[in-house]
Length: 284
Length: 267
Image 1 (spheres, rainbow over the protein chains, first blue to last red):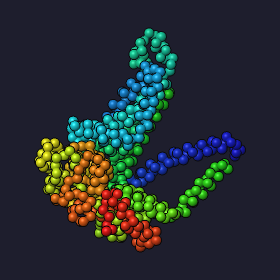
Image 2 (cartoon, helix red, strand yellow):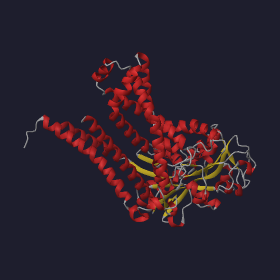
Image 3 (cartoon, chains in turn green, red):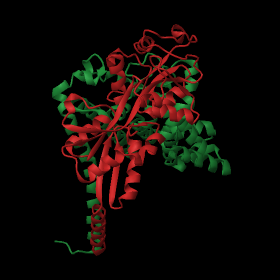
Image 4 (tube, each protein chain N blue to C red):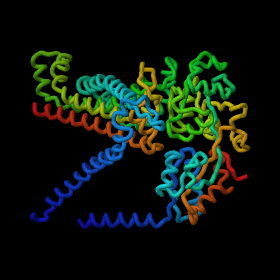
């Protein structure tokens, strides 16, 4: 149909690569869903929300405390990191200069590259004993929130940095020309204009906070309960999979896959949300 | 296009090359895996064309993988259950589970009853068992771990009776958790605990029923909370599998068993 030019070959191979990439994602979702299906018949969908507790070897499959624990953990971490991330980006763009700025940017990038298990280890050896001095046992929701906060702060700062970069220079200059001060410009022109870009970064960080496993597993204590205070231990959905998957059989196993399916769907929803936000922003 | 074909051909020939070596796959208990990893290295040295792949994942996985044929040999850190008699077990070493507390904890011993009450949440403060007025941090293992199973069986507990403050995965995490918390109590493999103590980690082992938690007492069978570390295989054991299992049981590797602070069965 078409002559086999190098152009066509390139397009074809690019299409092939894109197909493989998206195919892998679909295969993973299909696999997880397929493994989770037995859990819909037994223990049954409602069992995950109405059972008395989570004792999978005794046919008790209540996920509610872990869902609540995960939400507390992720929202706590994101609420702490978002303002600091945005302030950090404002510093980079409008206040930092020369060598200080260069060093600061490298430090943020370095922080973004530290493996999660290192944060977890540090949390277990330093943060948890510190919290234990205030309230036993130390391994707690608070420890998890703080570790996650440190982990997602650099990426929050970097995405906010990109969002500020996209604010048109003409807007800022216009604002100065109207006699606005620097602070007024930042608050009334830059931030509103970067709003949707910042929101996209925010949502992606929520996704990351929900999915983080190793560090959280090491510092939250992993007791399945609804936290009454920030000093209570909790178990996140991801930690539950990591702790028990290697040993799980039958219903227990499919229940864990069900947990995984929930996580995938929530993250998928977040990605779609950030995508539509991005589109509204671009269509402005 | 030609380049791509050449690349594919090259990859195929490479993969064929790696298939030419005989391969043994071992999966199972996280307690047994480090020991078998060392044994496997030594075995590979004397058998040039054999690759031994040791993967961890828990005793249950060792059983399941061996049944399904995913693994040639399973590693199981307990005696086989009656329902698992389709597999054959070969004991390579013994291990004991010891109660550990932080080294600054003044408690020197706990009775069976006291440990039971601490884990059931009836004793909430160290004061009630002769210690300081500090609340007890109960460290428990996650469901499915063989250490938990053995602990529950010994103390005749059900999982839902335990009121844990912290739940952990493997021995290493348990030791780190107790070392980082002066009020914690936990239970881990005695071998792993003795090794950590020799490395200067801030934990100490408590005696059980008046018997000192040591590898010595596990070897002579006096220690009550102990378990065999088994290799399991399905059906007739022959050829390479047989060679490897005999090697793992032999005195050629007893120094490796000792290095892991386990107790060798070969006298």
